[in-house]
Length: 166
Image (cartoon, rainbow, N blue to C red):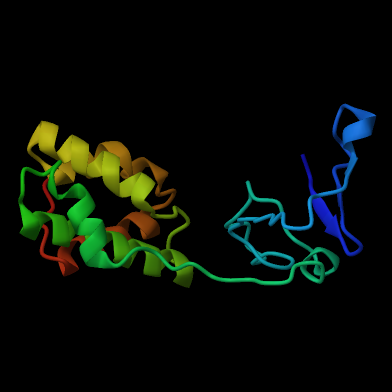
């Protein structure tokens, strides 16, 4: 449900099916936390198409805002290390590749986003297949929509020391 907080202490959920639940008076010690991928009117290129945009009137009703960065690369590597049977060099290469994909996404050279939800299945399939390249093709490559994007990803692949296998 779309949820908004009004100054004066009530919570408005206009689309709630129960009319009595559309306006709630939260307890004075209640904290409501919103998470989102986009601020304001969005980024203008639909990178967050599945996320509701918070407009200025909504943002004015929030007391605090905090950006939470991606995990530290060493933490990400530790999270996939067990899946990769302790191969810490491979784990760090995979994380470095993922960070280059994030950078390419921010720069607009690829449209597919990268997160731990991308890294984990890639690591799991790499362990099963014994090939990080084949696993990447099966988990991420299909999200790249053009030859230019695939070329950018392939350059990142080589930049971290992976060898491309056709």
